[in-house]
Length: 438
Image (cartoon, rainbow, N blue to C red; front, side, top):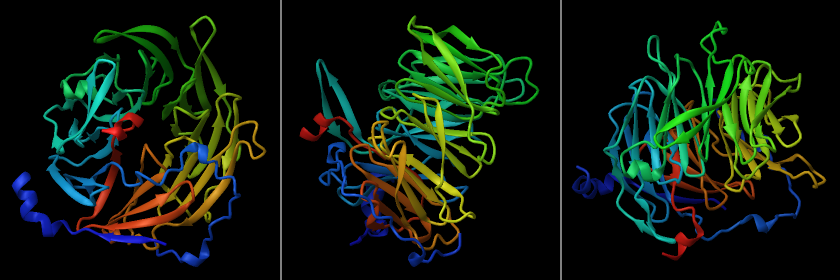
């Protein structure tokens, strides 16, 4: 049963101002695939706290500049902020802030959800505060690629002619302190990518040999205080590099001829391995996604997708499409990393259950395929996932609503109506188990 909850921010306008101021899809054509009774409740299929956290979303539209903070538990719009320029939202490393990357303006802003983790010696206090727009901003030429791992995030600036690319690394705490942890400037501009894991920075770079604006090499740096020192290079090993991701053991970069994996050798140095992709893929891998608790990477090549087991070097093409005309819009791992969801531009979702090597269905099985939004009104959908349960939240601007999907059971469970068209969105909240006791 789908629950519909209506929320009309226009009715709260006075209160808020005091604080602040593809074609329709036939449901019957897609049936959920029956999955076995192996629900594996050890992976935390919790229904309590199902509404925990706050969503931060941009108003829909290429020129929209306003961000909204919506409390899931209270079903209430708490605040809105004018970010001055359009941008896309991503989560900060510990899910307190929305990182608003405004590429054309050359600015990155931070919207504070109000979920404050306050360190106190051997423990922390968890405070729910009012949302706020941080006064801290990052500036540089064309901020583009961003990813994070274990409390630290790396933002890659593409630069421009005469302006070299750079990487800035920050944490939620450094945002509070209004400073970056460290930064690195490269020798030239490029459309690149970088990943941060503990004190090691893995970044694309461009050698003198490349004739395009894309990188062809990967370099490893180690952080010392506010800067990075060079550790190791893999020159010309990833021609036409585009896209990256990492997990606990590997760092992956998409290359023109496959995927480059970096890992740590027994002597502590880094080693590389180039993986070939299935010949049936419709091109090179240009985007990658990973999860810290999963050995798998997911890559996209055009509208094709591939599952990569970094521990074995094997890869399999994922048949995710309802029909061949489909294009994916948003993708995400669930919070435990054992499911991967693909939301296509027509409003249908495909969920894969990722299996370990000792499972009879290794490496994956198609769990569910169902309609989330029956008519998109030719508007783009967006998806974010909770980091404390199996909930996914779909921004549906055509119906001015947020649709809630249970990724564990593969079904729509709730619809929350708004009086605004939601666009790019992210989930924010406490991720520590201790936080639920405060």
